[in-house]
Image 1 (tube, rainbow, N blue to C red):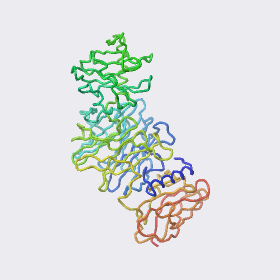
Image 2: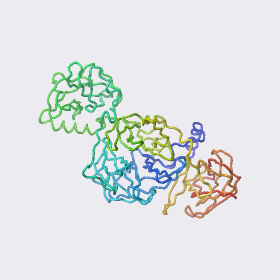
Image 3: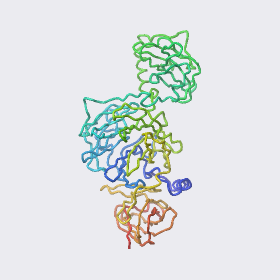
Image 4: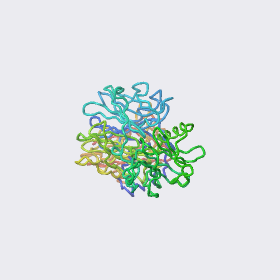
Length: 589
């Protein structure tokens, strides 16, 4: 991520004013990351992310990255052990996935666009959590085209593994024990997106029409009019006075409402009695909107420009036989569009279990997304909608969000993403984390995004080699990996820094050592305590080592440091890239 020094300075000053020295979210600052998928293995929390390419204007994503932590405040970058190149059958779109451990191996399920097949789900495997990963099958595990995205894997207590995915529909399969195939008898299950399971997307849907005894929100259509740029919601309902099925219409400023019933009565009362009438607006080649409905028999009216009335000279008519297929195709197209997303479920499912209760977290719509959850007595449903987990992130948010929930060292964490980094936005996102509180009754307290985790769950030992790419917060640097997969901090320029939190020096340290490489004039590492402008404990000089990969150890004496501190490695030098930084450690003498 290339950011000018002046921009970095302005950003840091703003952050410092808002959060002091405690800025922690987004937790990765050296590249744009999205779609966080946490996994706990032994004593370490591993985080698998997708990667937004710089300056993207679409979801341009080519690889995935891995990070780890043992304290929830310092994150070690392990590079990109999986990319589109891993799958010879893949074309593009390295989107949101999840990794899980089983039987001594790690299985990473990811959606990619397969050549000639559209969106598909692949599975990669490794002996290590940090990879490298290889294609487990040499072909997609599941292929279905558009919407087969965001796979999430879960292993139940009885050993049965589930793979959920989907946008705008929700699917799952039961994975076999090999984790690379699924139960063909059960097959691919499409989860019913009912009002009870995921809540109607339209705001105040059941309170829109005073004349309606009930509505069928799953038989409706929210469509935008080109005439006035307002949205019109057509919905199947039961009239209180006649107890017959009818179609109502209401108007609003947004696709999800709230809508206002300006007619005060049904729009359509004829030929609505048989089957699922499924009101749908289609537009013909002359841009004329038609309201259609019906089951085996299709009916339609020619809507007037106000979208609240129809041409009475034509009235309600069956669709002519010679036009029936044309209308049917347009109706099918509308059903598969965003206009026919009936419930709040949008994409990105994440399965989690607590005290015999199963939770399904998901981005909820419309757009911009918020996070919501439903619960079930089993991993396969039936699901019951519960509530919002996180509201739309208004300041610094992206129009998408993506949950990942995990228990670690006695606490529960919600991972998500925003667009808050410099240059960030809807297509340049950044991963964040906050604590999640699940109450005794199983309900979840709403999470309000914070500047970050204020208290870690562990300390950094400075007396062993620590990777320079273990970072709590960084400005003006990047991380990179050489051909031997050795990671290091790079693109270091004057004024950049790396912050490491909760470094426990115990009784004291008096010597500093680092592994560096430089093909330029070099520079210095200022070792500062507790803030970027804090007391200087020592200054370590870095000279030209003869190459950007020609690593040498440098050291310096420091003022004695004891107790626990946040350490800031502040880089100084004259012009351009100064040096690369591989690892560091302190010594007692």
